[in-house]
View 1 (cartoon, rainbow, N blue to C red):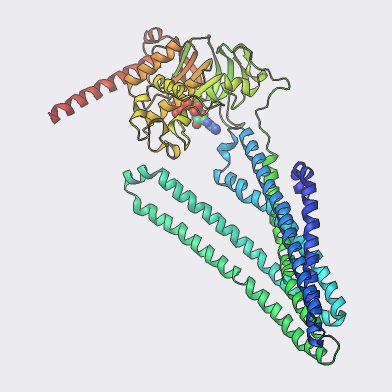
View 2 (view 1 turned 90 degrees about the horizontal axis):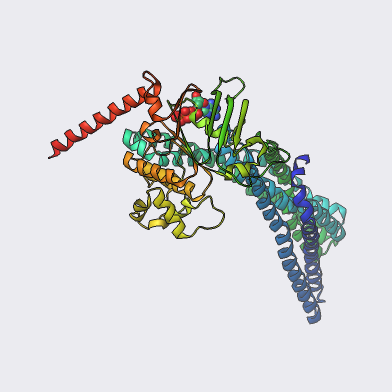
Length: 592
Ligand SMILES: Nc1ncnc2c1ncn2[C@@H]1O[C@H](COP(=O)(O)OP(=O)(O)OP(=O)(O)O)[C@@H](O)[C@H]1O
């Protein structure tokens, strides 16, 4: 139970609810046990001819009184125990989600999304189950069993009670035996269900690739296999679950038969009355659930503890990127950036990805980074945003070493458009205003969309700015998604704007217009691209290769370096675009 220490803050605040819930549950259990006693007296009076109108009314009032008390008590204990378990579920999931958000970006490169989802759903639920239904089952199985046995002994004596109860502990034993494989198979069903949903989700997300490659048949066969396993696991579970009721019926049946055979002898010999017999039959019914609960408790708590252990392991993961004890906020960020001899590798055993990188971006100026794929361009941005810490060297933002800044101060002063233009399953307007705390006015959103040259596109969508963007924006073109992300960044009005290859899917004309807008903004700008057309107007251009800056200057000075990578890339791209124009002209002529 040490695993449950994590829940202490919640439990301390809610201990009174548990106390009220448990006390009322016991009271209801006790009231339930009085009902057979009323029936017992009633039966005896009826059998001996002593049943008077007054006694009928007394019996009715007792049953009504106990019934009302049980109903009210049950309502209160259920809301207290189960309601608090639901609150615990909310609290734990919220704590987990906040922890997820605090973890480094790097953590998510290794963790599987499916596992993280399962922790937030199944594990949290398993823990909360123990703290609601689990507590109820403990009370019922211990308190109710003891009280029922005591009431039976009081009613018919020790010997008859023991004979009647003889077969019932086998219910707990049998349920205990079944529960484990049931849980194992439930887990298998859950796992295959998660594989099934992943299969559906991935196939739907990649539907264009599937259709374009004509592999529908292969994909549907692969899906059928997963679906088949899911069906098989479910059938196994259904069979095992089907054993529950027969087991209870079998042993309770034996118990009733034994009691009827033995009890009827006792009635005939006058040891017990008919009323005693009726009361014991009721007690035998009542003790069935506590016996079942007793069999289920161990497994339920084993599962809860295993889930809590898994959650604790995640809570124990600490972000590697930590703030300084006295993390500074930025009074006025000017958007300047300095890299001083920065070197970095993604892991101890991995090669250097950046080596001795130094550059400065003055406030309000633009810097472009150009280089082949894998040369380290995006890593520069990851380090500036402190998604990773440098191995050697130092990075300054607005004149302050970024390690001394609070992460919030640093990241809120930088509006970065990442390579992967991710859109949320929300409306276009919500996607643009996503990073703002308060809902932005439509007019401001429209202004941002105009800035990013996507306004006209949005107007042609079925519901304009209110059009819902499907998962990962599947209904939009790559260029539209990129421009919506640029509008989102613009809206933040941050002193430094970063575009990491964010114009790659936009035609050169639109790209020129957006870049012109960006220059007019007067903010500092870092632009990453593989296209000369995107970088040529920057105040400063860095050319990177294998983690090093191999050339730096303006477009003109770099073009003067004959044989340099910049000029080579320029010549290639120029040739490509000339070829492209020629091909298109030819196509147009053919059409005419
Ligand atoms: N999380 C990571 N773990 C290990 N290696 C990584 C990680 N991220 C990037 N790399 C490696 O670091 C190198 C530089 O990657 P980076 O993404 O910075 O290149 P890039 O110039 O931005 O490339 P592209 O233009 O294709 O985006 C590459 O060799 C890449 O494989």
